Length: 114
Length: 114
Image 1: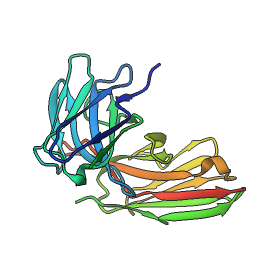
Image 2 (image 1 turned 90 degrees about the vertical axis):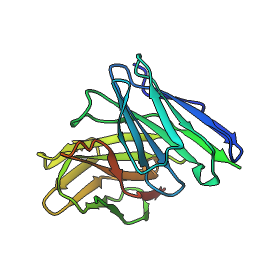
Image 3 (image 1 turned 60 degrees about the vertical axis):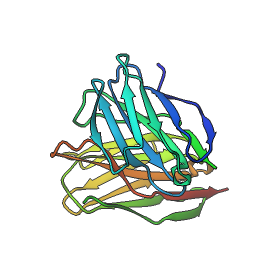
Image 4 (image 1 turned 180 degrees about the vertical axis):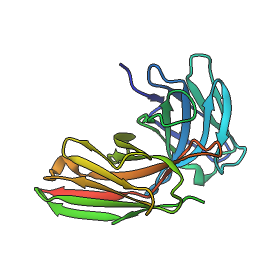
């Protein structure tokens, strides 16, 4: 049973560029959440997708956008990259929308903005 | 606004010691609480999930307790081993208000030396 997978593993971009990160949820899961983790900090919630809709959003600017596909996989897009966007981006999947479903995290994508 | 705090921020102990990691949260209206392990530069591995109606959960050498009314959880690690060295994060999920995100503490960085 494949767990949550993310691609790419590492990414280096220049300020002002755009980036797309990808996530495939654990088999049987239909909900995908994205988190940003700066060095030495806990992950911060970016947004959550369920039934191909953004259901909930954290305190992140509109430069951060996403998409969920019919197969439940998801993309995170960041436009006009800033140095402060350098972080580990984590994807988590769960089942069934709201409620006590356990979230399973992927290995993350390390984004470095220079 | 929910805030999650973890104490201590770092801990260094000899192998074999029993450990207690602490997590506190300001709003007791949580749906569940989850403890994670994170190795350097890696994703999160779920260790234990405690629903709000539960008092504790156990898995092997790990035991997590939850006191919702006082806003506290502890993770007990018995007979620590060098392989336990990692950062331990706790996260709460709110109940009600359509909030489904995890709110994380900043973690406890644990080093177990032989």
